[in-house]
Amino acid sequence: MVRSRRLVFLLLAGCLLGGCSPRRSDQAPVQGPRIISLAPNLTEIICAVGAGAALVGRTSACDYPPEIVKTVPVIGGFGAPNLEELLKSKPTLILDIALEDETTAKLIAQLGIRRARVPCAKLDDIPTAILTIGRLAQVEPAATSLAERIAAKVAERREALAAHKAAGQPVPTVFAEIWGDPLMTVGRNSFVAELIALAGGRNLGDEVADKDYFPVASEWVIARDPDIILCLYPIAGGSAQNPEEAAVKRLAARTGFSQIKAVRAGRVYGAFDNNLILRPGPRVLEGIEALQECIQPSENLYPPNTL
Image (cartoon, rainbow, N blue to C red; front, side, top):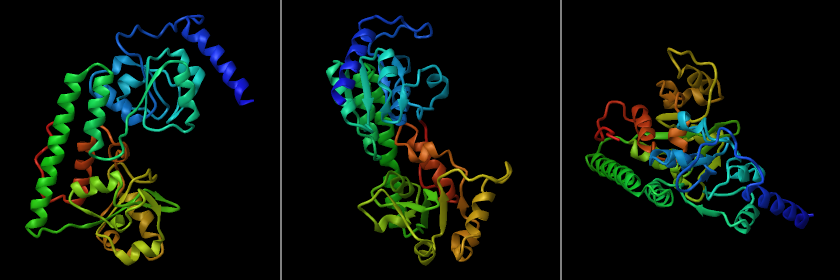
């Protein structure tokens, strides 16, 4: 059955790539590579380096920048392309960070379409990913400029944080709640933990190094009594004037949580653009600044973001 599906796929691919199907009326000619992005952070990088016009396909998770991506056909989900839709876009380059089914990579290779995996899961991966995409998209000068600016800003923030700690300034403990039911948080080596550190906090889950995300019990959080709680998922019910209201109420209603320092002090935050904080990409400094406003609101730890 697998073999027959592959034969059907290859016959379909020969027709589509060979010109048997007409060009879509809304598909403008693309100069240079015709790129499909299979990850939202890669899509953001492609657009940030000025190669948005080269995008001929994206995933349903790729939503930024909206003015560009809304004109690009959706060819499947995050890391899970629909092969028929992918082929309709006639790509010459496919970029991914991972595939839901790695056999898809073999089929793409059989068709002679270039595919590149661009690792981008950690903070220091971002400049490298930008440079890689700049080279593949043939926009190296713009990519080099952006990568260097982000790397320089991150280095400045690390130096400022080291000076802050050396001066004996307080570093509040932060519980990053990735999901509420079941309760999930982040480990030491996660991207979110990196951002929390650069925003002037200490991630409560840093004691766990081998998992980016892991479940915890309410008792685990209560015993550690964090200074700040970040709810990094949508919480309905807050007002436009006080978007944190729903987050505070929800946590205070949990057994034992009303005694946590963060809840007693009202330092529970939930009104984030989570794509800035959960998505390793070119807007990373905006994500750090959003966290800093909650973690170190009275501190001027870092120079302003000039990106």
